[in-house]
Amino acid sequence: MWNIEEFVEAAGVTVEELAAYVSESQRGEVPVLRRRPPGELAGRLGIAGLIAEGGLTARGYRDFLRAYLAEGTRLHHPACLAHQDAAPDFPAALADFVHGAANNLTAVYEMGAPATTVEIEVLRWMLAKVGFPRGGGVLTGGGSMANLTALLAARARAAPEAWEEGVPGDLVVLAPPSAHYSIARAVSILGLGARAVVPLATDGLGRVDVRRLPDISGKRVMAVVASACATGTGLHDNLRAIGGWCRERGVWFHVDAAHGASALLTDAYKHLLDGVDLADSVIWDAHKMLGTSSLAAAVLVRDEHALDDAFRQEASYLFYGDQGFDLLSRTLECTKGELGLKILLNLAWRGERGVGEHVARRYESAHRLWELAGRREGFVLPYEPESNILCFRYGTSDQAALRERLMADGAFYLTSTELGGVRHLRVTVMAPATDDVTLEALLDEIEARGKVSIGAD
Ligand SMILES: Cc1ncc(COP(=O)(O)O)c(C=O)c1O
Image 1 (cartoon, rainbow, N blue to C red):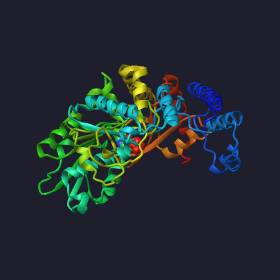
Image 2 (cartoon, protein in one colour; image 1 turned 135 degrees about the horizontal axis):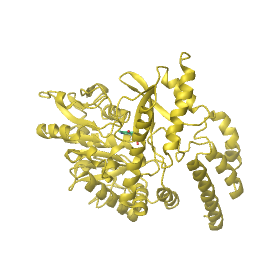
Image 3 (tube, rainbow, N blue to C red; image 1 turned 60 degrees about the vertical axis):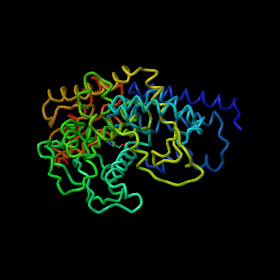
Image 4 (cartoon, rainbow, N blue to C red; image 1 turned 90 degrees about the vertical axis):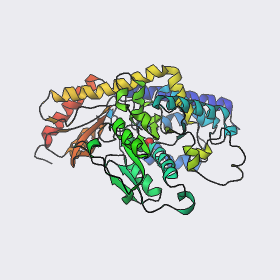
């Protein structure tokens, strides 16, 4: 049984330590990340002793939590410019806390009626945003799982016999090489084999070239995939043109909008999703631009039955009679967490407009970085950003080595990616704390470290 007094004390410690952690992170007064080797870190955190001896108290917990947080990667830090993971807003963090204690589940309605109801209502809101009035959906553990689930629904449509008899050898999926790697993985997992992914022709920046969509007569196309936006560049495919082409041919159109769907909440950027309503399936990660912790992603389908048709299973303790509001027939997961609550609480606290503002401000910051870099010598900017992701180069030296130097003392955290076979620095603006001062400091630092490197790499 819980000792309630002990819980209240420990929860108070958690709130105090997290408040201090987020506060110092947002002010950027500490390194954005540390990368101590795991052996050293395990010693520093006293993990072996904690496991062997137990008996942690609120005081010991405070010390542990403080050290644990200090060694981590600070997503609220202005210089955290790396991956597409949210700097979670606090209402969503509260939802995670609630889930951690109440553990209401969402696969079977009776396991958590409010949790499931919240999920159903959040999905209804998302379906309305993408323009699926008769659609269905489910929340699942991340964009990769969501892509797999959506493509399973596409397989059930193209080859309903596949569940019982295995996958026919002639199914293909058309996708740009810039699509997230989880698409190719899903195709393999679904039994088509990685060679079933037929690359769509693209322009020099990896966007589907809609003038060169292929002749598919004689091919059994399971799905056509487009990105909104592409992970590497943050650029969007032309959904209206590709969607119209799919409609004319009766082909399943899947839009991976894991990152970009949240722009539907903005006036300034929702045009980037124009045509998303032509899709048969869309995925939308909340843990990217809706400001929730990982994991929370939606699979949304135009036809509300498409997900239920995708899964067939027998487990007499769960599946019998009318499934009512049960979600387990739509998802890979059996036990499934209350993912809707963190999306709901962010919306309830900030309003749809407030969440949309968050998206718009981050997109504007990336654009600002592009403008500022363009005023300096030595920066190569291959495109104007459409979202909060921007790729660029500085000088001609090894950009991966330059990135390492920028990160060496924890001053900045950014990523790199290949564009047209050439490695570029890649920045994703996720944290509300990132401002013009951060962006100028980044460019100063790149110049300083990049100049040092010329000739050395
Ligand atoms: C376009 C796109 N799709 C899918 C994913 C995979 O999402 P997750 O990391 O939640 O599995 C990502 C992640 O970066 C993405 O950018």
